[in-house]
Amino acid sequence: GPEITLDRIGSFADPAIGDYYIIGEGERKLHNLIAYFLADSKDAELLKGIAYWESGRIIYLENILRPMILDDIPSVYLNKVIEDYLFSRQQAFLETQRGCMLKCKYCVYHKNLPFVCYYSLDRIFAELKYLIIDKQIWALRIIDAVFTSDLGRSKKIINYLIALKKTNNARLPWIYWELNYYNLDEEFMVLTAALKY
Image (cartoon, rainbow, N blue to C red; front, top):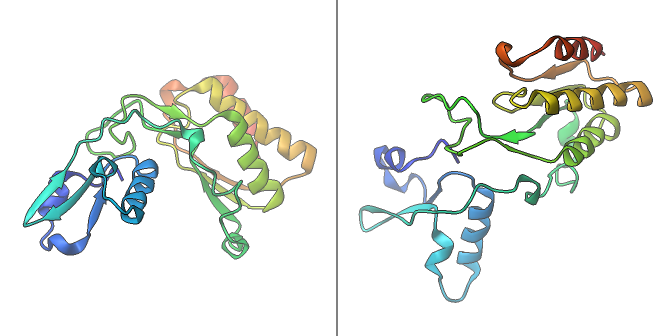
């Protein structure tokens, strides 16, 4: 993931702490790594973006893949991969975007992506409906770096949450997201107040 870099791998006291290290966005690279292990003939192309130790040195073939189209990543919620007992605490985490416009040096949220990528609103709405109506979660943490990076889009998500509340008598007393005060407006604040469950 974004926390792993070649420098970090080189700093480990014991190089054998891991066999392979996926650097950057991992979904496609993990798939490639599994395909590499399962293949009869080992194709080094499948190891691009993955570091590993060999004969006392780090081997790494740089990956030049474009940032992912986020909707290509299957939803663990909509595909019902999460077992029911894991919803017993009635909380869930949801990523609606990836990357960060601020690119602070100390932070990994931007994941070294050149821009912010977004999941489609249709997917987000489907996941929200599944979590709030079907699984009846009470706590939702949106794990975006800056939820309001696209203020108009953020308002659409809040409006959808308000509609869920009105049409389904849904309860969601705890919602958490991170934002920056300088890219807010009064309409956003009014909508947020209307979300009170």
